[in-house]
Image (cartoon, rainbow, N blue to C red; front, side, top):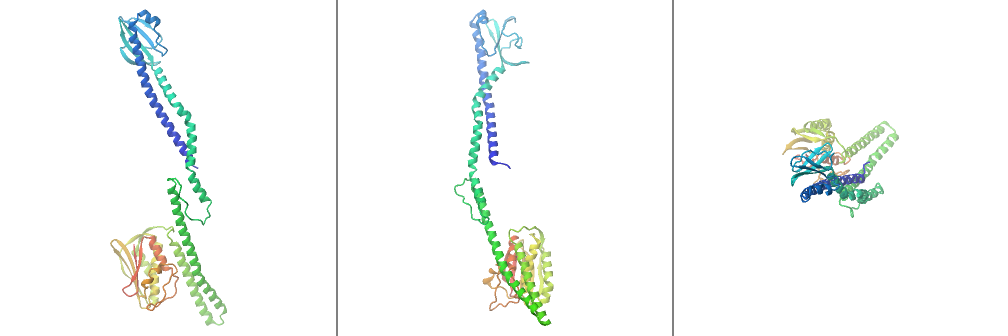
Length: 433
């Protein structure tokens, strides 16, 4: 498992070491430049001091120090008169001014000058200068190198203290009851931790809403299922108590109708659960033209049996991206509602048009319609519009879930569902994608 604390410690120390290395190299280069300048000046000063003394005194008393300086003196005839280190691998000829000689024993810094009647050559190993510069850089950097373990310990402690708010948030979440979804306090938290806590609070709020919705759904479903199941139980008892064939057939018919209603309610509940916003659905490109034709053909026999003229008035070519099965459930519910509430001899017209580049599906019937005051409430789960003075129900069977399912699926597909008056006096349902 990767540790933020260890990663921060590793990278901070790595950056510090890199910085120390770069600083050491820069200090070394600066010290080397100063050493070259200083030693070159020293060689020049030694050479300039030679003419003030006799040759014998130079040979007898001149001390070039312990910096590894080699002295060679020639006369004007080119005869080597003095060589302080015969084994020094220097050129047998003097070159006036400063130069650098490369030998098998390393590089030498050489200075040549004419001193009186003689030619003087002073040489010094470059390694002396490099060693001096390295010692200067090391003496400058060693306190930082010694302090690295203390710096690592300080970083470890400081990072640990900085991560304490995360540990407090983790402890608060671990100690919570599964049903405790209230927001976490985001005060007295570092700026870097506050976005995380706010995101967690947003997630907790969404979870609370989802759980409340689930609880309400389960409670409503249990309430709605109780009635048809109780009716089925009573009808079963009536079948058992029937004394003759006629009574038994009537009781069986009622039982079959009750089972059908309970089955339909269970199917609607399952469809509603699948249409929840957090449901995972597979999306594809859907041909609305073909899908509507299929839905109308499915309900055509039922409409014909009830004496209802069900057909497609207009069907333009249009397609949307979504889940085909979910859209089929939505259109089936709309066509089923229109067919159920349209009296015999009425009509249900389905149309698909494209307006301003947006597909619009309209389903109009000649039924009693929905009062204006109830058009928003009919989208609530288990709500069923009641009869009024100018509205007579044509079919009392229903669960009050059809339009709730329609709105859920429409929202999933970015569509808007509106209710209006149909030209034939019934209800006009429009789904605009």
